[in-house]
Amino acid sequence: MANKNKKEDKADWAPGGGLLLGLGVGFFFLKVNVFAFVGSILAGLGLGLIVGGIIGKRK
Image 1 (cartoon, rainbow, N blue to C red):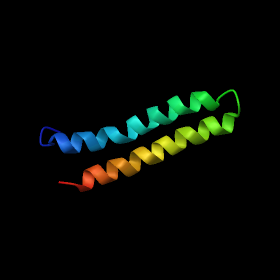
Image 2 (image 1 turned 90 degrees about the vertical axis):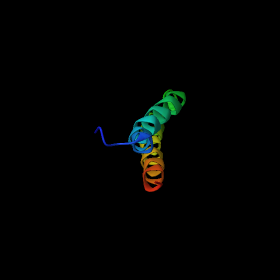
Image 3 (image 1 turned 180 degrees about the vertical axis):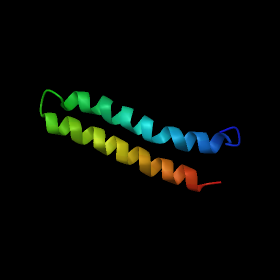
């Protein structure tokens, strides 16, 4: 862990940030439909994984 530089640390944080973003968006859909809430959480996680892969690929 001590060998990681700042770029790799940002790539590790991207899935968690996407998940929290999806959770925040999902709260707007919670009263409308529970499946939209779950879908927005999964979409946020997927977006975070994609962004983390893109950031991790850059060096």
